[in-house]
Amino acid sequence: MDFDYTVTTNKTFDEAVKTVEQETKNAGFRVLFIHDVTKTLAEKSFQIEPFKIIEICNAKSAYTVLKADIKIGLCLPCKINVYQKDSKIYISGMRPVILSQFFPKANLGNLPAEVDEIIRGIIDKSK
Image (cartoon, rainbow, N blue to C red; front, side, top):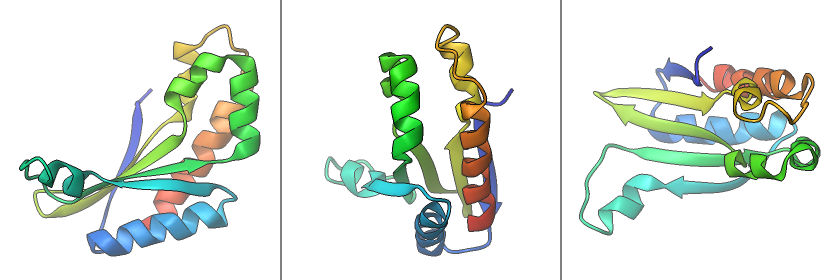
């Protein structure tokens, strides 16, 4: 199983970021914060192509996994990255279905697969 789900898009970088924000809301999740990694690194004189980390969350899902194992908080909130590499724009997210591999005793049921489907949907609709 892949750790990530990644697609390319013909949208501009900024259009892709805005679309991820909107599709996150459409899916019933909330954008908590957007990290402008390019800007942050530039402040220390490091130059990279455009890269943002979009933190998203669904309170009910977060509550459920945290009740199962508080250490799952290390993987929260869910993140979707939008970045440019070699003149292409990518949208990428970690696959929640891998949580069971890291937390086998958490007994998460179908929740990771359900959230995985939602995140892949956000990414697909954003491309």
